[in-house]
Image (tube, rainbow, N blue to C red):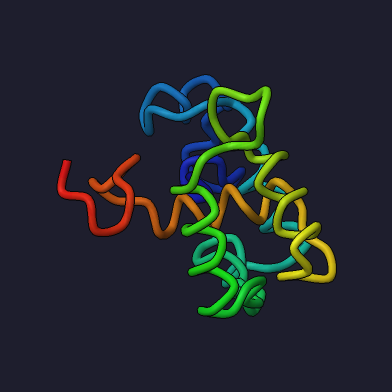
Length: 124
């Protein structure tokens, strides 16, 4: 893209570059801007991304208690467990000092498998 946009070279306009490379005008603009502001290497290869360390929100014992709670009966007045109910229950039982429904969702999604609503030990 940069070679095609070069003023001393073909000097293509953005629409020609878009058509030739099958991209959007914003992509051409971004690459050109990166080249001008950050240099050739960054424009060509991009920046090195640092991955944020993932912090475990619940330990294994807490995860097991969450799953066991989910497999049990929901509180009276509710047909099924919700993420908010599970978070409230985990806090009420003092399993965790604080927890959000999003943490429950991530943990349950990570651990959820084909035994969707099966009670432990019950093959049905």
